[in-house]
Image 1 (tube, rainbow, N blue to C red):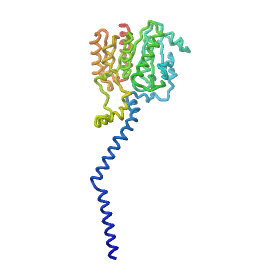
Image 2: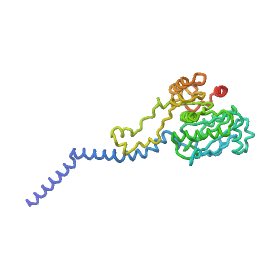
Image 3: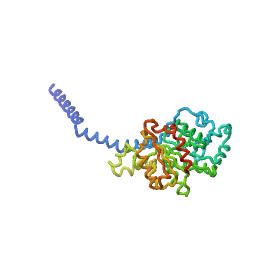
Image 4: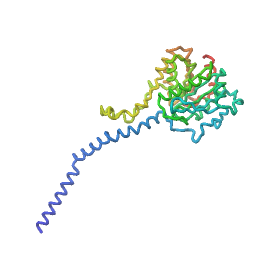
Length: 348
């Protein structure tokens, strides 16, 4: 009986010692730090790889196909009854969906006409606008249709492309890719438009694409006839928010060698301020004072840069009162805009 009791006590003491070792603070500390190291060295790189697509989407929002459930090949569904849908190949494997709206005075003649007829009308001496849109949705967005209708009413041609990855255009968006797309549309228009004026109208993200493309053309000795920058931004002053995982690289120097920044290939620059110092095209800035997305003070800074590079006669800034409620997308509704656009065209 005594031996049995001694054995039980010994077993109990051994179990207690194991529990103590299990609850040892030093042991818990080691386990938590090993887990943290596992997260840093394994899980974070994995998340960063996944984040490439997320970052690209946050910048371009090209996967938001609004309005929903529409057939972009049928512009007539959006009351654009003198518009044709075409597809242009900006480079191998990249097809761009583009709407071409002719001046309103041609709407009867335009009924039932094919691409060749629309293409030939570009040479009728009417100004041609290439509208480069912002970073959300497609060419069917209400405000984009509104701009096309406005310009058509004024007697101008309008081409509204969806960049690669947007709408029914193929590919994935990058800054270089969007610039290539805009350059291709411009070259296609110039090939068919003869002596007609060709003007870029960039809105939001499209202002960055417009200035990038204007500089590319300037490098070829080509000066755009005119550029309209609506709701523009200045990346030199308006930095994108720091990436959520950026701490990973400066906290652990050298690890970037093994896990390169996944957003580097989609780096967004759009150096509009630098571009404006190199551009010679007449410029018209349009901006709503209540624009919550691209703040007017940054557009005004760009205006000053453009004026210092050219002169006040070739650069115009028009603001719209916040009480009108136009925000970021509503300027096309302003009753003054037709006269502002006509005056700009006459100055070219």
